[in-house]
Image (cartoon, rainbow, N blue to C red; front, side, top):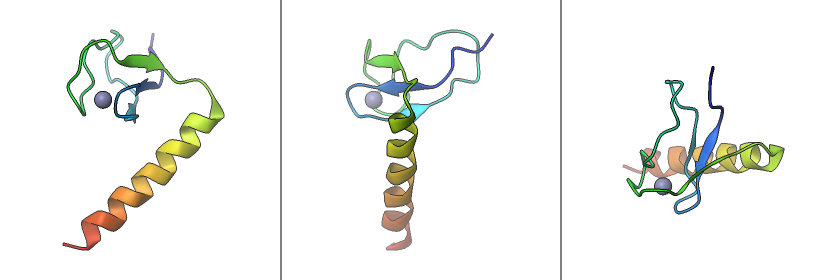
Length: 61
Ligand SMILES: [Zn+2]
């Protein structure tokens, strides 16, 4: 059973855990207790726009 999509309330990083256990730390900013389940469609839109920004930043270098 998958825990589903999670997001970090600290840095807004979103991801889907590979394991069936609820992660304790955010893999992006490494903070404890900031992860919550993301169920709203708006969260998915935020993630897509975030990935687009990161891709553009990477192309500069
Ligand atoms: Zn985070």
